[in-house]
Every structure is written in structure tokens, then in C-alpha cells.
Amino acid sequence: MGQGSKMLSEMNDRSREVFRRVVEGYLASGDPVGSRTLTRHMTEKVSAATIRNVMQDLEYLGLLDSPHVSAGRIPTQLGLRMFVDGLLEVGTVSDEDRERIDATMGGNEHDVVSLLDRVGATLSSITHGASLVLSPKHEAPIRHIEFVSLGADRALVVLVFADGHVENRVFRPPPGQTASSMREAANFLNALVEGRTLADMRQTIGQEISRRRREIDALAHDLVQSGLAVWENPGEQSERLIVRGRANLLEGSTEAADFERIRTLFDDLERKRDIAEFLELAEEGEGVRIFIGSENKLFSLSGSSLVVSPYMNADRKIIGAIGVIGPTRLNYGRIVPIVDYTAQLVGRLVSDRGKG
Image (tube, rainbow, N blue to C red):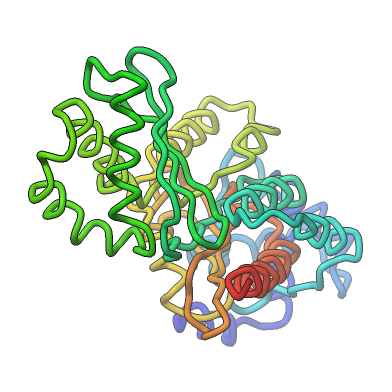
């Protein structure tokens, strides 16, 4: 950032304007911007040859690139970073976008995940990118646990929390389970977990199972252990990430390289690897942050950009994050305020529901 600011301050007005117009043109169209196009929009009347010379200088500095033999230029990753840090004009959320975001917050259900799912769907629709929403960990006491058979090799474990929040996950139960063993396992757990949070339960439930093993038969015992394992495995962190709008990333892509980049991004999103880092990105600084191309350590292989903001609870503690991911030619000036507004709104709403 320091290097970019220095380069920007050392540019003359003409170079700065050529650079700004090339980046803005590229972000708007996705196409290289040529000298003849710029001659029609420059503040001062200059020839196409003069502009080409300026472009060559900017290319030498590593700020622009020529994707083809044509005279058109596109910004490099360094150029985009310098533009975002020094020249980006951030707008305000339009009335239409604000109304659409506000409308997602109108549900009365206590299930925060359903709310965040709606928020993510709306955010991806508005921005034409993929939305990422990291939901808060749920720390309310547990009121009830239930096991539901979905077939011979599939079952559902349902957790109902004291605040009305419900979570459920599909898992593979031990063989031979019956309706009776499922009821017995659930009754055994409910006698132990009421009033405890999930974190409390993890610390004590193993000891309780060993100590009170004679109270349940072998089938129910195995079900209790396998059902709880669903909540203890490393994938639990990834369950907190809600991804919506993947299809938006395919729009306008025709080249094989684009499809390969998007396929890599889809793979990353599907595996949801290192999702804890997604929250860490937001925690490194308050407000909206922009990661361009390889700066984005989560999705660097796909060369995508990520606009992300944390959201906080009433105690100003970061509890989740909201972001939009897409190609590097995102409309940053429009998306930054949308992400910021949505994150603040979600933080207030989650805090209010926590009080209820």
C-alpha cells in the first residue's frame, strides 16, 4: 500500500487520469481499454499517440498489462490494488439495494442460520457475485436432543437450544439401530445435557457415558457416541459457512482459462477449507477489507477478489463475517458499501435476537 501511494503521488495529472480511466473502463466492461477510447473521455485534449506513450510508461511500472497484441490495456493486480487504495470512489447503498437487504431481515423466526441464508442469497443477487456468510457459533444451552432415522444407513441428530435455535445434521449411525435404541439414546442424553452448552457437553459427556454405561444397551451407547462425533469433528467449523450464488461466477465467462479459474474456486468453496481463516481475515481490521487475486490466501489459486467485513454483537465482539467473492473486476465502489451496510445490519439483528 505504501509503495502504491508513493507511485500515485509521483504521477503527473495526465498519467493519473489515464490510469484511473483504464481501470474504471476495465471494471465496467471487463475488456482492455484502448488509447482511442480514452481520447474521447480525457479532461484535456491529447492525441492517441500521447496516450499510448503514457500507457507504455504505466505498463513499465507494472500497473497495466497488454493481454493481447492490440493496444488495449488492463490493470495488473498491483494496479488494481493501487486504484482501490488511492483512487476508488466508494458510493452509497442505493435505495433499491437498501430495501432489498432490509427485506431479508423481516422474518420472525429465531433461527439465525435461516436469516443468514436469506441474507446471503440476497447479497449474491444484488452484487452478481458469490456471497460468503460465516454464522456465529451457537453458545446457548441445549434444551433437547433427538435422533431420527432416515433409512438403514442414514440418521439425523437434532439439537434444540433454549433460545429456540435448531441445528440438525445427517450422519451414518452404527448398524442395527432400532426406533427403540434411538429413543433410549436420546433420553439418556437429554437427562445429561439440559442446561449445558455444546462446549460444556463436550467436556463432560464422555465421562458421563463411561460412568453410566450400564444404564443403556450397547446399541444406544454406540449411537450416542457416533451422534456426538458429528458435532466434534473438524468439519464443524465449515458448517458455519453459507455460500450462495456460485452460478453468478459463470456469467460472461467464455474462455477456458476463466472456467478453470472458476472450477478451482468452486472446489475451494465446496471443501470450505481453512474457513477459520475467513474470519481471521475480517478480524485483522475493523470495517470492510478488500483482497485482490493472490492477496486472498483462501482463494488465491483462482485469482478472485474478496470484499469482506466482520459483524459484531452488542459487546463489540466479532462473531462472524460477510463477504462477496468474484472476479478481480468487481465493481468495488458499489460492493464495498453494500457489504458494510449488510454486516452492520446483521450484527444488530443477531444481537437483538440474542437478547430475546
